[in-house]
Amino acid sequence: MASLGSAREAAALILSIAIRPCTGALVLLTIAFGLRIPLAGILATLAMGAGTAALNAIAISGAALRIAGGLIIIVLTLGFGL
Image 1: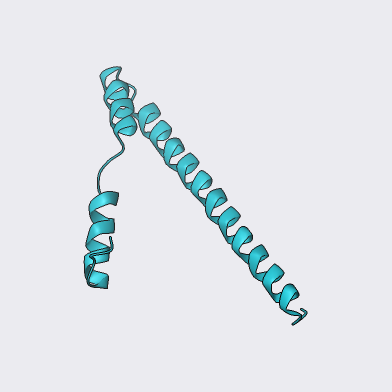
Image 2: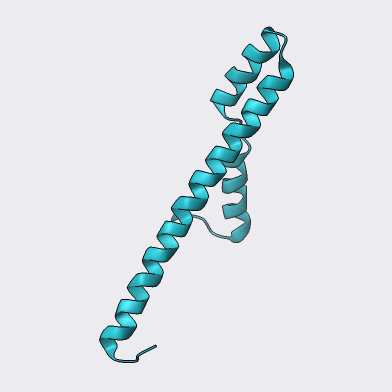
């Protein structure tokens, strides 16, 4: 990533990673279609995606709170007050 020269190269890298389907979802859909219950497979795949999104949201918010807490400590240490 240190050799990325532009925002376009960074976007291409992100797209190339994100476009790859989840292997677990593919297996789940294959089994569901094989058992002739495609709706169950589709709903389960959507549930997997929602769970992944929720976990990422929790991780990102936790990191943001940690950064914000560190900034508050720095401000208080320097005596600027709030």
